[in-house]
Image (cartoon, rainbow, N blue to C red):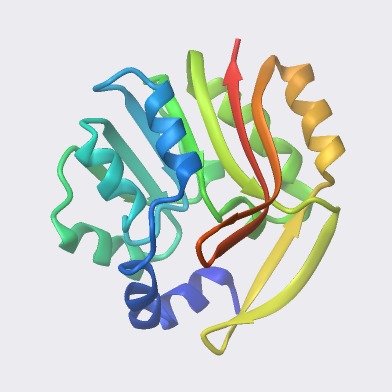
Length: 197
């Protein structure tokens, strides 16, 4: 069983949940930092709701990638403007275009632990100079299986200090790093907004 299979199975529950969630303030901050009409890559875009929809309404051009065919099918059915949705593993994604922003909200923790280190260099290469990277993450090195809507999902992450050190070595400036982020009913262990120098 893979996360892709699990997401395909929970699609209806996911749609009901995501269509009623807020756009968190760090996502609004991320959009505010990027020039109007910029380009954004959404890693693990899901159904496009509410994030791609919000960014589209802000006049950004979005490329959304997700492994789940059902998620992408649902995303395409919403009718979001200025967006291209692709069924794709992020590690297989390539683009000649350099993005003004990359967002990975609740997606990096599904990547295999042995490949987590690759994420940051790949994002750095995909970003235009001065581009922004917003992501959520765990604080401690971890790898586990958990359930969501009755289906099993794989999760992993590297430690917060290791990720910060790795990003600084690559050439990222950390705009902010928020531990134990809470907004209304939403909470995240760690939220990071970084900028490519």
